[in-house]
Image (cartoon, rainbow, N blue to C red):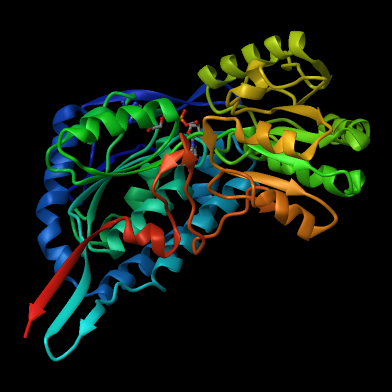
Length: 466
Ligand code: NAD
């Protein structure tokens, strides 16, 4: 299998190549094209020249294109999911869920419209608010959910009449490139372009004078560089960044009942989820029981190659993240007690067993930083006001959850938490119709839903004096 960039409707080789590894084996999975700066410029130029015609198509025509792309994703979901597992590491069932989820996101946006809003229509005046496309969008994607996160950005951007250049992360470019090959003829040349890099073109795309908006998902550190890079030309930006979501478990839960849900909230995709539960605060009266239940689940988890049937947790996605999480675990060994996991099997692949750390508290690296891996600190609390203050005392504010057998009680706590999304008796649920965005250093703006669509538009008011 060979992989190509998609530039101006043509599938082209990269000016260079790079290896993409399978994180379950550490073997080279494929040679991947790597675009040069000149190819980035070509992709932006193609998107720029496709913009005038695309922006003048009717919204119904654009919906037809999005539905066509969704059909293609669904038709090829088995192949795309296998490839995603091989490059990203996640179990095949999860990869299939991600691919089909992406198709559903493409379809969802076809249910939205951008009608002209009449603000005033009187004898004297007619004032209208229009939502106009911006122009060329740059979409920058991380390695944890390469396809569904692309589907947060591409459908609303295209529906609004923009054209786009997509740049996946270097370690997970293949599925995005294969997607590009499959959909190349499903839309006019240049409307959707895909380039890859070795972490060296994101800044160039951000600063490019012909790119009007950057929609970025990734770490807070890189997000801050994007903001700085976009400042000179006052570009529009949407930033979906890191998180350190707290889960707060009240004293009235049934530990056996909630433990599997807590585990899922923390360990889905091996904890490599922006909205994974990354700190778990448990009331002292049920602390030991919750810890014990979590240990049972962690010890029973099947960790292995995502292509193998029965695997629940795959490898970490890349060596850098693997080394970072191992270092965090080593520090946590001194700051608390590891009661499950903490080990890496003696075999190839970036595997770490799901790790539970108890008797640890705020002020330690594992609790204060975003670990982005399969290791969960379980922190004891006594007082409600104190635990809410601790949950909120983070520079991040992406998600969070509250767990109780009394939803009204949980709601009261949820109402006091300072994050973009708070879940009650669940953690991490998203939907294409539900706006999603971070508070504080977890982001700027929002994606999905009508709010997400509006971010790909320029508000234009026409104010007529009759
Ligand atoms: P990252 O910031 O290292 O990389 C993200 C993307 O930015 C990649 O495509 C990378 O090539 C590109 N990039 C690198 N340098 C750049 C620069 N100077 N300018 C522009 N782009 C540049 O993030 P990652 O390690 O791939 O992903 C993990 C992080 O992403 C975690 O912090 C996680 O919480 C966050 N994340 C957030 C969300 C969300 O919706 N809030 C979703 C998924 C992941």
